[in-house]
Image 1: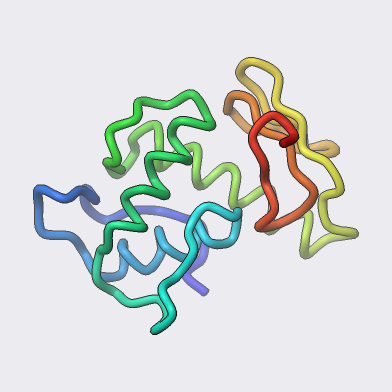
Image 2: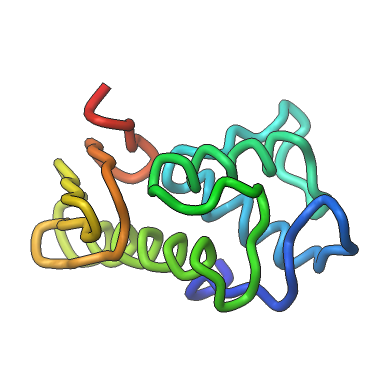
Length: 131
């Protein structure tokens, strides 16, 4: 929908946010199982669930847990790498059956992504430590 995940400006509770950045972030986090949209659907406005989802993502991947995403920052780069790998595997073959991350690298069949410890069964179904 938006191409590779990339922010235009900082996404936090304490500043004005770009509405496209809000949508990109919600869709990216939803695609890997971190963001659950409200009943009325995904909006272009930041909400509490988005910031909670960012923090869970940061916590699971061993990133700074500040609920903030900055252009070029660690959280943005990691979310881009994870979503790109999931999308590539989904589009080029059978979707991911397992994802293993060892200390600083995620191994998705032949793709390697910087990260921490997460296991999963496919797009939108990641679980921490296989639970």
